[in-house]
Length: 427
Image 1: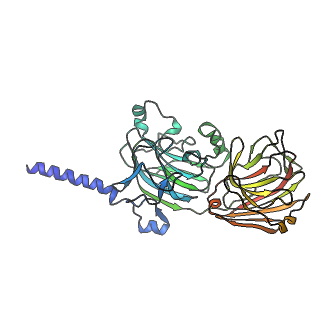
Image 2 (image 1 turned 60 degrees about the vertical axis):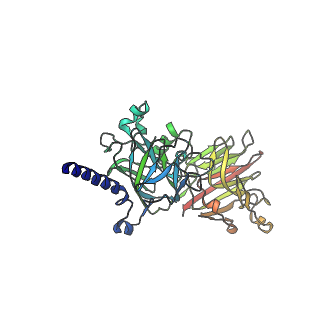
Image 3 (image 1 turned 90 degrees about the vertical axis):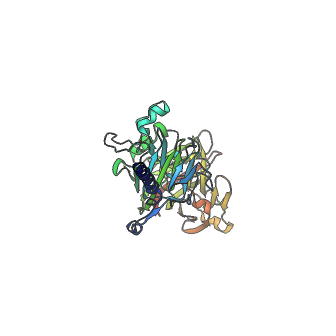
């Protein structure tokens, strides 16, 4: 009888110890971590700081259980994502996780919220969390190599023989280090993949396979951290992040020789002549865009333009183009005199945000080279034309924008504009 009681007591003690392993010891920062700048993304008690992707509150299928974040397994490919309120650029992100048998989840980052993006993974890269061992038995089909645990989903895969993965139901630790485009994934203290974003190799992978029809995938340099409920229970704890400093980028966006670094949308004509970038109406006389391959959010941009014919054009910023030719974002106007050159227009929703007063219209030099300067820093956008201040807009919606620099050619035909000395410095 005494032996039985001892066995039951020991079992109860182990159960309490296991319960406390998540709720009492987890989700805390040491004094050293605090001094180093680490912050918790989960306080162990609530989901404060998290909400639905694309929403203003958290509606599920997520909850806190025994000091862990639990994905209840009710999500799908189209739903069940939660994101941090805050956005992050460069960071060291660590967390612990375990997955149900045959389960699937993920940690995404640099996720962009915009009505055009229905799911987070069309913008945000994903560290895959999945039960490799039991997947086929539970789900009835095998995993591709690029779907397995600790890959950069559909992009980079590790040496699976060297990978240390604990089985379903046991805790694993993972880490993502994103340092100005140099990316490292770790699993249980060992590197699984290491790569550089936005390189020719990265773009070659992005523009084929899974992401061939997701043109904005992985381009944003800033975005939300995102957890995925993909229809299987998953647990998370000890989620902590340390932000890393951003390096300044300063470069010419146009090399004077070809369209390297730019993507073309529409049937209008974009070509290089005598070291200038030319845009001219094409056979369809419709809208056209030449957009930077990369995203630029906060920047100081200068460029020169000369309107050879009808000069109805513009410089878009924090923008992206939905194929074939639908632009999302904000435009600094380039137009004939008396049509608000250097004003700011929103391409969807509100229209004109800042128009140019009549007394400033003569700052535009017709038939000559003009210099445009655009400074975008957070919510504040300033424009200058030939050295004169033209706009100074503060707008929260614009401040949340993410995207490319894009040159526009308006519809209607008969348009020809020259561009040169396109130079950017990130802020």
